[in-house]
Image 1 (cartoon, rainbow, N blue to C red):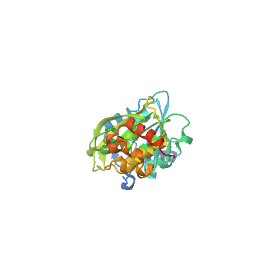
Image 2: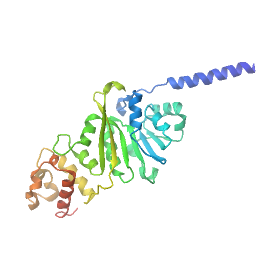
Image 3: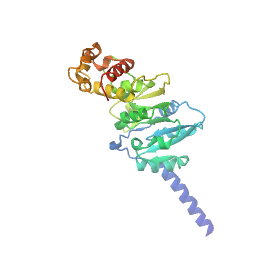
Image 4: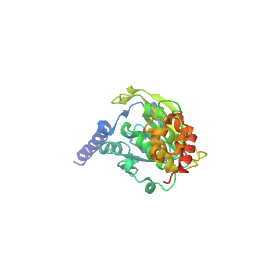
Length: 282
């Protein structure tokens, strides 16, 4: 009788383990989920975080753990994951027991990162396409704590972030990211390595905080100037920025206001911010 009970217990444990491994997460369009299938690409993404000494790393949207497994193999990384999808959390805990106590079920955009991390940490992920820009804006809000941010996003967004003045892709995200980070467009990823395949190509980027980049101006006003200018990017800045100075303000005759925003470099936006700051009260 005892041997029969033992047999059924072993059978149950084996069945349960194999069942968990056979589980799959249903990709959810509302969450922008496209699960990477290519292990070689996942490993290459994991290697973009070249940190040591137990540097905390936060992975956003681990999904089914294709990137997570390589991050866990790096003993130099103190990994925490944040995942909004409860089905993915269940799958991850079943297949990666090392994540027990190291995975947060929640929305990265709503997390209080200052409470979670007292010191520096890095960010990585196969970022959900529908919130990728919002993720980078949040990284910028915590730029003093995040020395490296790397991961996969839509190719269009990656090109926008890395683009230079004078190009069509150059915009708000380009200026604000490049104001504080050196950004590398590492490689392009094709649609067929995802489940389900997205309708666009993807790209892997890496942002490294450049401590020599000091924005010598009012940073809140800098962000406001950049966003206001690009909100009407086809217009000369004398039109888009006149609301900040007042219609007919003498400063609007300065040659810089005859330009369109995509013509200005980061340093020129800093100079413009200082020029505006001297002429308005904010």
